[in-house]
Image (cartoon, rainbow, N blue to C red; front, side, top):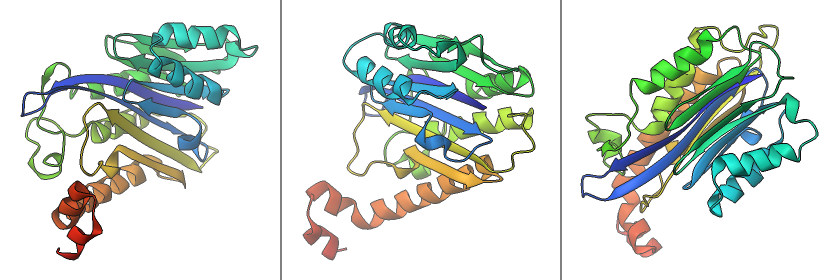
Length: 255
């Protein structure tokens, strides 16, 4: 019913600080996918789909945040799940990756597990959907390199790479162009993207947590919403950054 991607990226800011970020993006031919499938924190990312079990995302990520390895966390939850054969779940933590597609998932279904990201889908037109998502992300992946696209300057000054949220939306778009979810009789669709990182900002980028709950063009609408959020973030920093840094509305009145 869905295809999604979970990633981990390690990067160095222009000031020389080392950070790690996690992201997940998902789309499906049903409304409200952002409420059920994607889960992210500054310690990992999980996507749960097929016959959705929200516990796999919520509890799995909570276990990871408590220090359990992603494979141990999700395997333990699947072992206790009577309907595990109909689940599809995948994700990443600070070190490892994990991907599972139960034998009861509907064709075409499958997953890809790489060094620092995972991709999975079911009820797809074919495996070329996941291949397109994989190729699109790999072409822009940031891993262990200097990354100028983090922080407030990312909005206007990114040179080498786009923010992760945009690149994940682009990966979804690549999969959709190859056919995506095969259920063409269901026109109402949805999409979501979420990113979290160990880096902190005076104003957290709003484009890192976006969802389109019901539309016939979810990825295009998600991309448009992303662009608006980036523009709004730039305008917010220009007008209110001092107030946020001072944690005082007095500073806002001076703007």
